[in-house]
Image (cartoon, rainbow, N blue to C red; front, side, top):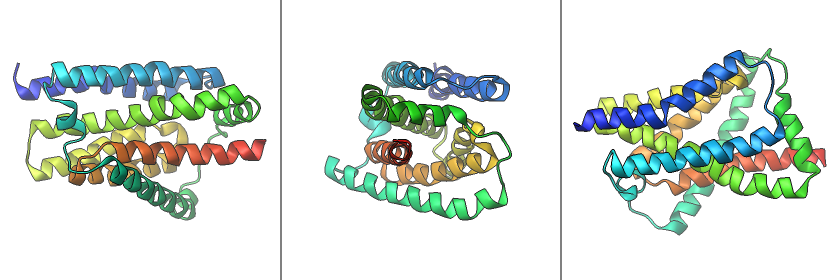
Length: 232
């Protein structure tokens, strides 16, 4: 089994199915996720696919964790500081996007009541709050999505080491990740895609996973925490 085939097979097993399922579900869904769904599904699917990615990386791609996810030079405390910096960058983009693309491309879809319902329940259930801001946020969402992003990038980069190809992969990956969030509307797809481009270029240059996870968890967590406090 040659190198290219192994990498494409790994993507086909671990990355494409879950993204295709989510896109199709969002296009055809008739009911929103419940709060239980939004708590259990990330842990089951996010945690499970994260394990699958690590297994495929070791036994199919035949790379170590460090070679694929953490080959750049650095220390954990620098990763934490850079993660905080990337969080600031995320929020800077957030406010700029609200003043630009969200004004230019208004979302005419009904409000996403599943998020509102989840926030209301989190505001009134301390145990659920701990579970959501703990394993759900850090493992089921941040770890899963960043492992998936980096694994997709690295597998496609393994196919060809041409620089133009590697840059193209960043945009292809970001387009797929943006489309997986189509329930947020066209502006949301563009917003998620732009953030993915930025974070993918960071990984392209520095090859460190932890800053991506920290920035993702803090960006999502701070927004949720703000709204939960409002509902309280």
